[in-house]
Length: 303
Image (tube, rainbow, N blue to C red; front, side, top):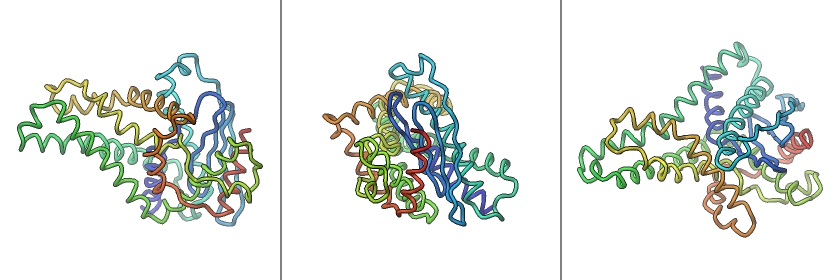
């Protein structure tokens, strides 16, 4: 049960915080249990430190995305799926390496179960519950049930509040604090690489733990963009149709959000990424030198 709880916590973090890397010469990454996954356009790798302090590496070559996967708006959906898939593979590797030996029995079964629970919780927390609560509000206030714009605004506001609560609460978990430190290490290493700095721990630790293309920023944009996209769902539809339509529109929301993140990461427009940067105060922590070492090792595997 302890293993299921721990893996479920990490799986939720993986699903919600998947980093969306650019399709060109961008380097993307993701924190996992006691490690960091990095990806370039040509390869991905994950480096994890075991309980004895040794580093373990897994690396795979990436196939080039098909033509439609490089088109605006479509590429966001393709990269989201790819990032989630690679993130879950990296998380599984990290769990096998970093978790205590007594928690590793039945690895495939436990990991599959934890991933399934994480997906259900994510859909329930960010799609089902906001819609259900808004429906309950509409039953008490007719102006909410009859005004589609107001209904969707309240639904979206609840979704954003739930997301902010998720970020705050997960930061209280001891396991997640370690992952957030690795998240900070990942950002420092990527910032150093993009600035052309020397890839040494002493130099990298001086860089910011924040990054404009972070998955945290992406998810915040998703929460806001969903308000606009979901407003096109017919207000007359019954509850379950509205919920299923929201699930089906996730790819479109992801595509729009990804294009905004790419646009806001360009220097003249970085002010647009400020809300996401501020949110990273919660989802990143200052890393230890040993954690930066892990992130550097992962980056060097994909260069």
